[in-house]
Length: 392
Image (cartoon, rainbow, N blue to C red; front, side, top):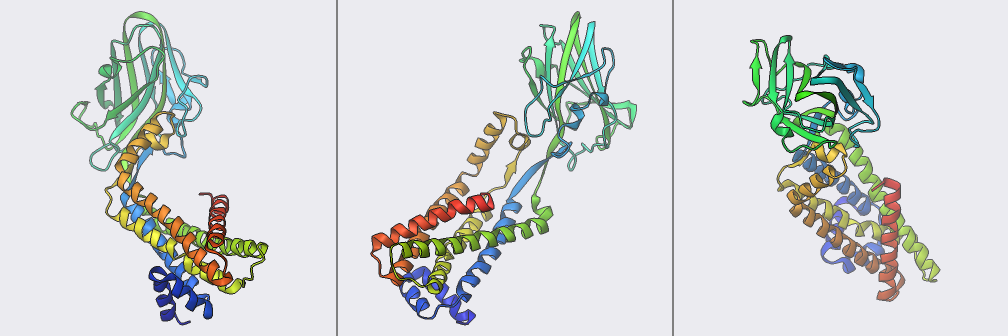
């Protein structure tokens, strides 16, 4: 069966499967299923590219691999007017990005608590439009009972005398004692004040927090989850690695489904004492998997016309509650694509089982009910095995 004839047979399976299967079984050749597999891999690469083009993932500093390294090591900080900072393993933010501790700052009989993060691991670009646009920070105070009357954050640039500062007091108006406050602070905006001619948003190298209370008391403040964020990038920048991995997974997915469905149908028919030959069976099953190719084409088309999909820090940060909210928001934004993909998945289930049943009935002359039963069991057992082998 030359390539042209194989393509005709593949197309015929779509609109006239019984007639196509009868013709294929009379002269079974592996070229048809192999061609479908190659087209499936190519289409899956196209789907991966369409997905990456439409997807943007928030970038942070520190990165995911570094966790929140700035609030993991107390030696990175200086408690300017209080006791030495301590690492608190019992009271911290639990999440994928957040390590296993916070930094605790204390002052005795004081109305002021100020702490400074010494030189950052690298200068941070916070200037528009390419720099980090937001600063994420978790703060909790455990004493005194009354709220701070003033809170300010300082970002230093180049020299200690050149900096930007931002009043955080309003962020604490609704805060509660012993509760972590999740702050998102926009950067390079008019809400920041500038001191010094050399202050440069493109070169931030240190950070300080200052809290003021109305009267002297014993003060304890915890800080965790300090990240620069707000930059969204598409994974398409690493296209080569993604494409290689995706092509390998696509090959495994098709091959496993092809061999497992064919093998299970063969074993079950032999168990029912039906006469069946391996070669025409596995070739017809390979042709039946044209449904996988069509599903990928539908999903690719759906992603191609969908709006941009943004994966925010809350979704990937792993904090319980926040991730669920971000995920639900993402589902709302991608609702149409999700519906199309779900419908195409159901279509493939039904269509593939029907094509396999046609192949079984043609090769064994079994009843339609038995053919459908065998096809259904073989298909879903294969999906279960595939999930264990490939991982999804």
